[in-house]
Image (cartoon, rainbow, N blue to C red):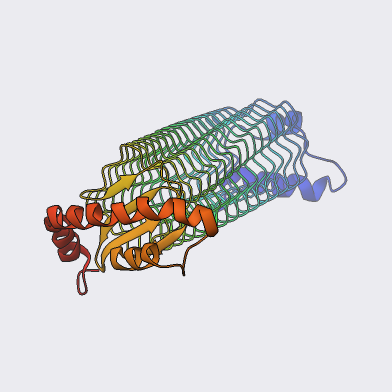
Length: 446
C-alpha cells in the first residue's frame, strides 16, 4: 500500500524534476511517515530521522552519511549502494532490508535488527554491530574487517567468502552459520558459539578460538595454522584434511572428532582429550602430546615420528601400521594398545607401561623392545625386527647380523644368546597379557 508521504513526494518530484531532495525539503512537505517513499539519490547527510517510518522506501544511492536513524523503521527498505558511513542506526529495524553493496563504514548498528537482511558485498569495515541480530542474514562477500560483532546473533547467517579479518566476534552466536571460504585471519572468536557451523575451506590462521564451542562443526579442509584453540570444544567436529600445523590445542576437547589425514605437525596438544578420535593417516610428526588422553583413539597409519608422548594415555589405542620411530614415550600408558605392524625403532620407552611388554637398554645391538600384539609377540633388537626363535638363530650363527661383523659380532653374540631365555621366560610369565590383546584386537574385533 502506498502511503500519503509517497504520493506527496511523487507529486513534488514531478513538479521539481531537477531538484535533489534534502532533509529540509522533507521536513517542509512531510512529517515522519515516509513509508514507500521514493528517496532515491536523496541528500540526507546528518539528517535527524529518529523514529521515522521508512518501511519499503526506496533509498537507493541516497547519501545518509552521519544521519541519525536511531530506532527508525526500515523494514524491507531498498538501501542498495546507499552511503551510510558514520550513520547512527542503533536499535533500528532493518528486517528484510536490501543493503547490497551499501557503504556502512564506521556506522553504529548496535542492537539493530537485521534479520534476513541482504548485506551481500556491503562494506562494514569498522562498524559497530555489538549485540546485533543478524539471523539468516545474507553477508556473502561482505567486508567486515575490524568490525565489532561481540554478542551478535549470526545464527544461520550466510557468510560465504566474507572478509572477517581482525573482527571481534567474542561471545557471538554463529550456530549453523555458513562460513565456507570465509577469511577469518586474526579474528577474535573467544567464547563464540560455532556449533554445527560450516567452515569448510575457511582461512582461520592466527585466529583466537580459546574456549569456543565448535561441537559438530564442519572444518574440512580449513586452514588452522597458528590458531589458538586452547580449551575449545571440538567434540564430534569434522576436521578431515584440515591444516593444523603449529596450532595450539592445549587442553582442547576433541573427543569423537574426525581428524583423518589431518596435518598436525608441530602442533601443541598437551593435555588434550582425544578419546575415541579418528586420527587415521594423520601427520603428527614433532607434535607435542605430553599428558594427552588418547584412549580408544584410532591412529592406524598415522605418522608419529619424533612425537613427544611423555605421560600420554594410549590405553586400547589402535596403532596398527603407525610410524612410531623415535618418539618419546617415557611414562606413556600403552596397556591394551594395538601395536600390530607398528614401527617402534628408536622409540624411548623408559618407564612406559607396555602391559606385559619388555624393554632393555644398554646392549651394543641397541634397545630391545618386545610387546604383545594380535599376531603374537613383536620383538625389535636395535633396528632388527624379529621373533625370539629368529634372534636365537642369528646369534648362534654368522649370517643375518645387522651392522655387525668380525670381532664386533663375536662381542655381541654372548649377550644376545643370554637374552633369548630371558625373553622366553617373559613371554610365559605375561601370556595373559598377550591373550587379552588378541581378544581385544584379533580378527573380527576391529
